[in-house]
Amino acid sequence: MNIVFEDEFESVILMRGFSIYAKGNVTNIKKDGDIITAVVYGSSKYSVHVKIVNNQFLHGGCSCPYSEGRYNCKHIAALLYYLSNENTLETITTESDLSTIVNEIPINLLKEFLINEVSANPKLYDKFRVEFIEYFNPLTKEEYRIKIYDSIKNCEGNYGYIDYDNAWEYTHNMYEFTNEAEKLTQKGNYNLAFDIVSVILESIPDTEIDDSNGFTSEVANDCIKVIYDILNNNANKDKELTHKILEFVITEIKTEDLSNYGIELYRLVSYFVENKLFINEIENSLLEVLDENIDKDYYYKAKYYVDYLIDIYKLKKEQNNIKDLLKKYSKEKSIFLKYIDLLINEHCVDEAIKLLKERIIKDAEDYRVRDLEEYLMNIYYDNNMIKDYKEQLYKMFFQYQIYDLETYNKIKKLYDKQDWDKEKLNIIDKLKKANAGSIIYNIYVEEKMFDDLFLAIKDKGMEVIKIYDHYLQPKYNKELIEIYIDECLNKAKFVSDRSDYRALAYNISHISKIKGSDKSVTNLIEEISCLYLTKRPAMKDEFNKVLNIK
Image 1 (cartoon, rainbow, N blue to C red):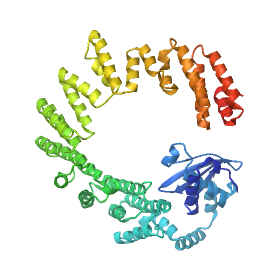
Image 2: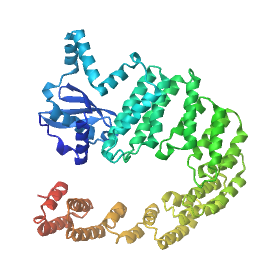
Image 3: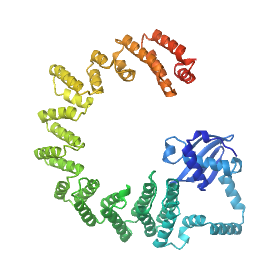
Image 4: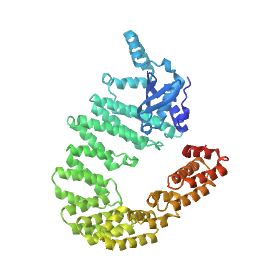
């Protein structure tokens, strides 16, 4: 059956969709009127639906993130390829029809069929085993390790690694194992479920894969979700398993094998702290790791580990340890700022300011030092240190070029009206010398200096002027119309593609909304029509869409 759909998809999406279909990953097809549903396996399991009327694809949907952005995804394409190549819409059995048929088949024939099919198909056997896992003898961890590594090996191409085209198959295969772990969790077999996902996580650093689409992160996230489920269901029942999971997490924190792949297993620490489990062991392990990395110029996980330790010290009511902790590891900026906050809360404002100033001088070459300057400015403000606050505001505005109206208006509030009338001109003059650009135009608007605004932007081109022209109307209507007409005539000589034609048409439409522009716009359109429209069909088409010009 030939379904019309390919024009609705990007070519790369069609290619990937056909690959998914060809691998046999379109399953569970069902029909309800014009709507066809299916389960499609890609990097995960997705629910897909399409609407087909008279062999024409009208629309579809999928539970994947790409489709949620209202795009036609590869999983929708895979279902459409299946329908086009494997079946006709009329022969798809509905769920109710299938149920009726199954009920009519003698049970002994069903059993015989099931045994034969499952025995002959290893993938179906595994699916059957997982679905009814409580009736099977459980596999050992080593058996799972062999199956997982064999599954990874089977995804490799000729060059000994998993290339981009086979990476989705890797995630699909790993999904089968995480799905099995989920089933085991639901059945209460937490130890074996953890064995499966821990082997998968351990395999990631050993897996050579083109990870352009972040497939390993998807696999890891599925594993971590299973671990959370195990903890939530098991924590107060099997302390030995809970501690085994903690040891696995602590080992990763110390080796950072998974962190190098952007996998944040260490975040599981929060679960143990929140539930007051093995607090002393976590404290010692985190302090050990922090001490090993204390001399690094940048150790991004330090802020997380310090936060966990703060929570531990709060639980243990050891407030003094928090201050010592923040001070010791304050090389990391966010920890340093927590230390500054603590000093301020203890009313040690002078010490906080002194430390901030020293850090600003020390980190002068670091672009992130601006955050420290802003922190200092806010301390001055909160403590009513007006002179220092004013100096810091100017420093932020000019030295760090925070050319925004918010900072400008903070400065403005420090002056009375008479002094401000003079100071604003000084600020504008400094900004002009600094070639500060649009902030000057915004200040003119803020101060209602519209004559200065017109003089500043009249030579900047229509795209800039359009942003501000409603402030200049009606006083400068005549001048605006002349500037815009001249620019449109000049651009009409050089535009060469549809996007340019469309932009030109919209600019003419913009001119037509200015009071007194009717005659000028009519003459402009007539001149462009005479010179260009007959020679440029695409331009005529775009003008017709925007301006209704035949």
